[in-house]
Length: 144
Picture 1 (tube, rainbow, N blue to C red):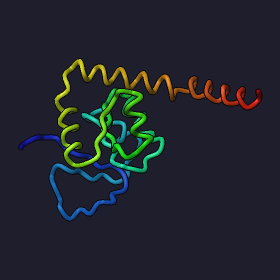
Picture 2: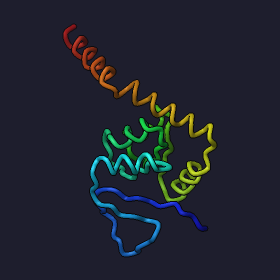
Picture 3: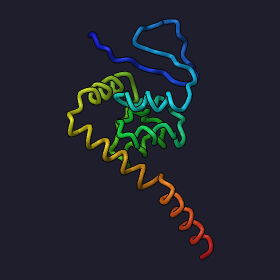
C-alpha cells in the first residue's frame, strides 16, 4: 500500500525509534505557530493518550474543523468525541486502522459535518462567554 500520508509526532517521544519509518516524522517540541500550521494542513488529529485531561490541542483541532481520532480509554477524550460528533474513537490496532481509513475516505459532506460539529462544540462549551456563564452559574448555585 503506497501513500504520501505521514504521521507527524509532536512533543516528547516516549516510543523507541528503533524501527525508523519514512512515513513517521518526529518533530519534538515546536512553537505554537508551527503546531497550528500542522493542524491546519492535517487530515486529522490523533490523540493516543489513555490519560488525557482537557486536551487543548483536541479543542484547537475541532475549532479548525479537523476530525479527531482519540483513544477510547481516555474518558475525557471519549466524552469530547461523543458530545461533539467531530471525531472517532479507537481502542486497538484494528480499530485505529479502521477509523483512520474512515477519516481518509470521508466525503466532502461528511468533512463539512465534522467541521461544523467541531467548531460548534468548541464555541458552545469553551469560548470565553460560555466559560464565564458556567462560572456565574456555579457561583449562583453556591450562593443559593
